[in-house]
Amino acid sequence: MRLKVTLIALAVSALPALAAAEGCGWQHMKDSANTCPTGSTLDAKTGTCVKLTTS
Image 1 (cartoon, helix red, strand yellow):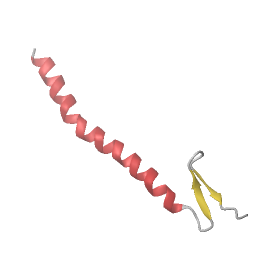
Image 2 (image 1 turned 60 degrees about the vertical axis):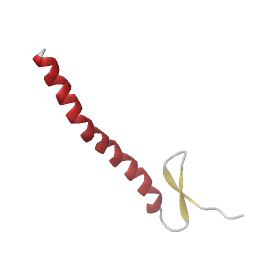
Image 3 (image 1 turned 90 degrees about the vertical axis):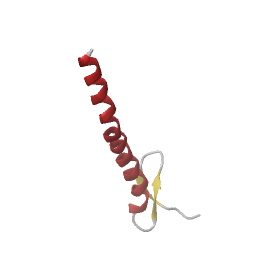
């Protein structure tokens, strides 16, 4: 019984750290759109910068 309570307490205390780690990845993806050089934009499909074309 004591082991079960200890494991549950460890799991619950680790949840905020896991949630914070997930947030870092989202922020990086959000910032990457702003790092493309002038004249290019982020291609959502490939996740890379592509040159803007004019017609």
